[in-house]
Image (tube, rainbow, N blue to C red; front, side, top):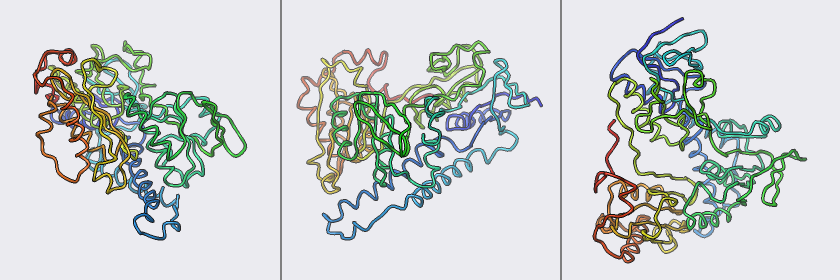
Length: 481
């Protein structure tokens, strides 16, 4: 069977579905090819079910504070792991159904089930079907990375986010290998649900934190809840009663191992190497980061398939840009917004703006504010943590910051909006604040920066080299999609 269409999209995740939305504005001649389960990574195995697990863990952890609040009976509370997992799956299925109802359920012949392989830059094969298109969008997503020897030697003892929520019962003990955002979030959630958890990280940071001050604070806070070992790769071997995990002179025998050491783009089997596509050492095609076009080929790439950090908002925007450019001779450019990352641990971890590694320390003023004395944090019984902000010494422009503390998911958004608009410390302080709210920590930290700034007068400096050709206000320009 052979088909000819204007555009074919490979992958029905957030990037692919948003590409289809753009394509539909121009043409009805398209196909969406998808191999595997529908419903997007976020809805099926990522953002949403993990947040359900985190929420359940947070609720159960509150029992430790009941006696202080005058509430009795906490000692009799127990977690039914099977019921908790069933609840996670029920909500997961709801999220998936919502995605399908708004996207692929509207499709009939446009949806093709199967795995694609390129024959030439204008042709793919999907099973016994040949599809020829003027342009393609690759949006195949990514999957958890697991060393082949671990998977082959330890079988279902090894868990990833793709299969964790399919368990019928919670394990008694678990080692988390990899304490990036996924490993930290799920490790803490499972610990709070009664699993005996230990964490291992080959690097020296939690959740990809570059800021050493916030990283140290985060490590100290997390270690109060469950043991974590940093700075050495973990080794695993069979042991009586399960698997022995060892690193940094420590070893623990556990029932299951959750591997969260990274994700690999789902590009194997596409046949890109056979159509003149240059790839990097990870097998990711070399592409223009603005137009998302692969070389000079009529092929565009978007979302987790690009090998970047998984982020639904970025994937959706890249999908829109790739979909538009696949239909038009004149291409739109993808512009990155202010970087922002949020880890939904308790307390939250977040970082915004210019990364620590790119700061010119001699031209930056730093401000710190602990959450300990913040009134709302004290009321909530969640006043552990630290906020660390950065501002340009010469201009007073807020560059970003990192934080570990209560409800930092909200502080991160406020801070990112200020950074996006190239606001100065004084300008941010003129924004409204209320009382008593967690946001007062941001206000107090801005006051610390204000006192430290040498001069409020704008002067040219290293910041302009980071954003060449962008004046005040221009840094917040949205992508042209």
